[in-house]
Image (cartoon, rainbow over all chains, first blue to last red; front, side, top):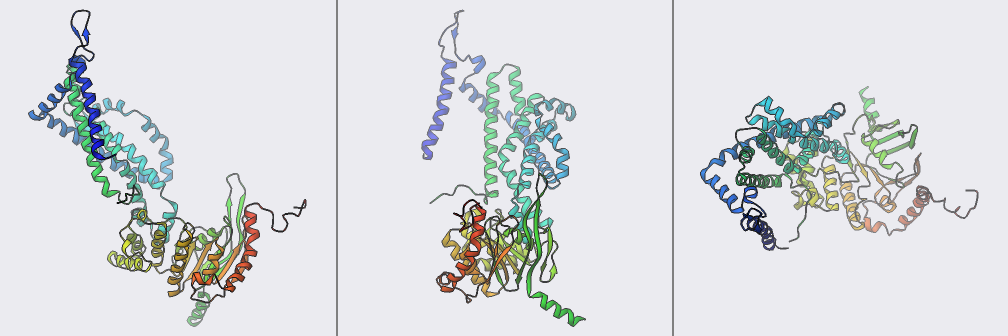
Length: 267
Length: 286
């Protein structure tokens, strides 16, 4: 299928979905018992696509949204940086020291089994309502993804590649640098989309549960006053925000994973 | 004293790999032992090309791993140029059967790394790597990653990776096994050409009879496992330098082929649980 046709179809899906939303929220399909017009999607609960888009534009024009975007972005970036760094280091450590891994194994599994949302209130208590409670919530999400990937990556280095590297005269330090490290990193990069996504989730959920700024806060505020248009506007901004981040991740990972076998295109 | 040492060293030095009474046994998970290789003696003289031939699973590769120092023997010892081997064999290069290139390094980085580990400056190592890639016919492929190369090209890179370090002993574990017939022939030619230039001791493990005779000075035949041992030792008096394609049509080649095959045949049948040849119709006694 060629690109333009695909794009046209994709846009078609959006137009149809928005069309249905618009029609059923603005055109009554009958009259209710009390004589008022009856809508399938009452505006009070569903707003209208036009109102949502208008609100988004207004938020950007007035500039009030930038502060919230910046806060969420900083939280997500810090969560990713701290989570990824600690995940790489501890994953490496566990993979190279089987005893440590064996001792901590049940605790790691227990921590990972815990739904992270329940930590949000306690983090708010420990780290306050500022950005750090959100950052640490994101860290608990990102850490485990990166940790498991690095752990797996280091342990599953091909024994043949390893034997070859040793026959080529590598000492322990050189093995770490030329074999284990690249093997582990390739796993981190392949999980980059998931871990960046979770960093944003951590930030937004944390904001939602208690904060004074950020996209999660915006949505929560709107919800509190039954401002459905505001809720949808916040969700739309969040979606675009996450897609942009995902796009950046794709740009970053491409040159880092050139050595990976992928599709070979004929020209 | 010093004079004696030198003569001593000279006599010993003519043997590159000397496996003495080496056996291999594995502990089984349910207790007990699996005797893979009976005590065997294998000696490879300096400059000699020895092929070890045997059915699959007979422990040929195990012997190579012992000579490489990648695993210790259960009993016996390995002497490398007269020195008892403990730890890795640092004067040997090992060409593996499977892909052993680092997939995250380009072809030239893969070749250069063996020199860098030795402390050669990176710029010089890369220069030497490029020169060797030319020798194996991959002059323009230096910047490719392993997955962008064909199986035969990857083997060439692996060959360059091993040879660039100028090992005194070459250990090869069915290196051309996964390649198609034509590529194998080309690779064998390349190997012989490179080997002819500065004869190193070679231990070449294979299950391919033709390949063993065409390449080697001497062919050792191993019996089927368990309790594998060396059951045949054939000198290959074919003239050098050899033309791999030509040599196969010589009458001497055919004579050797029949002789080695007669030795190997029963062992191959054993691995597949077939009755010994000639006794197939023998009746109830077997």
